[in-house]
Picture 1 (cartoon, rainbow, N blue to C red):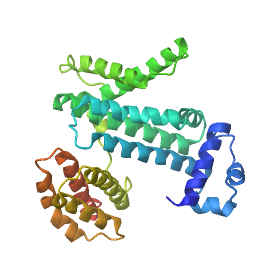
Picture 2 (cartoon, helix red, strand yellow):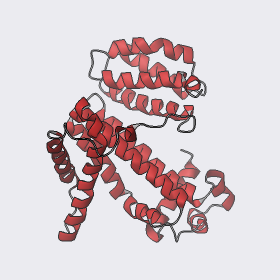
Picture 3 (tube, rainbow, N blue to C red):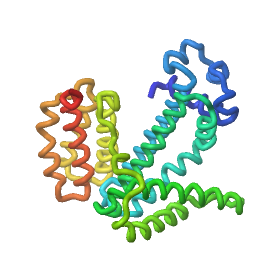
Length: 298
């Protein structure tokens, strides 16, 4: 990230926590960051845009850490899921985000409220998809129900614990409790109709939902994680060469799509007997989506 942009985000984040988002002015940010108004507007169109950039940055970091946690591990491993949920909860506490969320939802700013609703729905969908991976295909049609109940248990348990104790809250213990309750529920649910339709899980894939650059960035992030990990594992050079080639292509301004496509199947093949098979397949699927992006938008 541009150092100046990071400086503005860091200062704005601190001020939003200390003074509150509503009462912090752009002039406050300019004064604390010691920058001119033009410098701020070179990076952000408004105070709202600055806040959304802060939350996007946290979201990107959370996604990166979650991918690191799951690398080379079965998707149905409950310990992986628990640690992935824990990442978000710890991030909220470390970054003092709950106060920011509350100030946004209590405001009358429809732009920010719409943005926050979108973020919240994405987290529910991510959790629903992970619960389906944990419990199997029979759980798919109930997965949004389970996601909502899961977060409801966590939220209300947190409130009750904070009312009755001043001890630091044990996030991991609460996540385990909520997951245990969902597992019990799932064992007796098959004959019932889900409350939330599985259509809730369908992400809109239209030309306005994401850009080709978004896909490219996601591919680079996932390749960065797995390449860094495999280098430390001293895996064979032949395997690593395929991934390093893909990473170098996607880091370039204009990846050579015909070359990228030509190495996807060989890349899958060299990893098909390894614990990284699912991770590699996901990256290759994203690469194909990147290559076919224009056709998908028609």
